[in-house]
Image 1 (cartoon, rainbow, N blue to C red):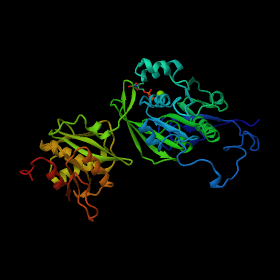
Image 2: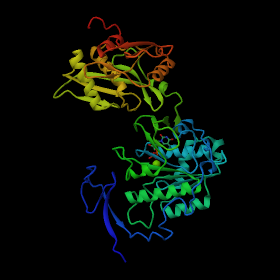
Image 3: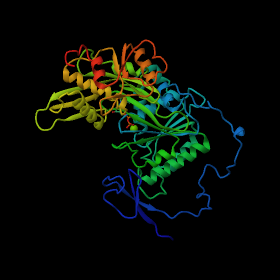
Image 4: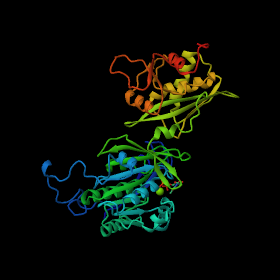
Length: 473
Ligand code: TYD
Ligand code: MG
């Protein structure tokens, strides 16, 4: 018999090495190399060695293939359906990733409770490797908010099982014949014939490939939960992202209520689509008007607060940005961003210092995006700058104004994409003024209901934005 071969695989980036290393040479993580014992490959012509959807695959004409555009299982959670591209595609495999404790299990259990028994495709098997059936039931009851009527009519077609052996899980699937299977989580399941522990790169890759084969050959929709590490990489394997059809990330600040469900890959719909939820005592509640929710706690006429319209996929969202400057007590002046990029904040602070003469050198600067959102697009530069300037000068920003624009190194304002959609959303929420970069080409007229002020530079924009800031400039 051939001697089993040993190799080492990085849990984070999948880098393979022939010898053990304390630190991964690719991603630099310490202690991330897992030992993996490779069993010799079976001969290719044996049945087991045949990889693929089915052994008797056969090319077909496009017109002969069954199925249409809207062959989807409807999902009555609108925000979830939106992210999937409008319902669940039978035979698809969807990865739901996110930090531990962010609400993945809650969201999927809620989805199953909504779906189970409601449609012709309402037979669901929920496989958990992390919680017992009893714990899941407790959670389910909690989601129903102890509503007696609903508890009496618990869905009949929802099956729960705690299992981590993939072979056994596949047997359960054959027995239950569900339309939808949830695997919570992929890091807990394992194939006994592979000699490495659950959660290792090989296990995760092989298990998900097996689940994909199941999905494609049987038409069952499979949802796979994957935990994510701090760096934003699906723990274990990035490889998972290539195997599945759709990758959804559940994001948000654990200490804040809002959760964003974001699609980063979707074979059956648009990517970078976002659904907004709020984590409450009885589970995830859809936020139908997110902009309103993000602005709900805003105090108007207070220095250091500015409103920006950020694009999350195709959806404009109004978000409050707060800035605070405070004289440095000792040592170097600190810059503390929360929800915006550190380097972006440095750039904005440098432009404010050099082009507008604000003395930020001896000031600590804090910037915060309200609601636990993260804004990475440069369109928020202007709002960051104005929030800081407003705090520094102790003059509030006009309460009914939104600010949009990327800042260049010379203090000029640069164009932002999808301005029209952003302005419409601002007008819808009752904002009366928008301060935007100057247009180079005159195109269509600005959307109605909002007074658009074009500013060439950051200096001009700040003059427009701050209430009666005449004497200083
Ligand atoms: P969970 O879905 O278990 O997270 P994940 O599967 O992503 O690890 O969510 C756990 C958190 O959600 C936990 O901190 C408690 C909170 N939670 C609520 O706030 N309300 C609820 O109704 C439920 C079920 C959980
Ligand atoms: Mg969980």
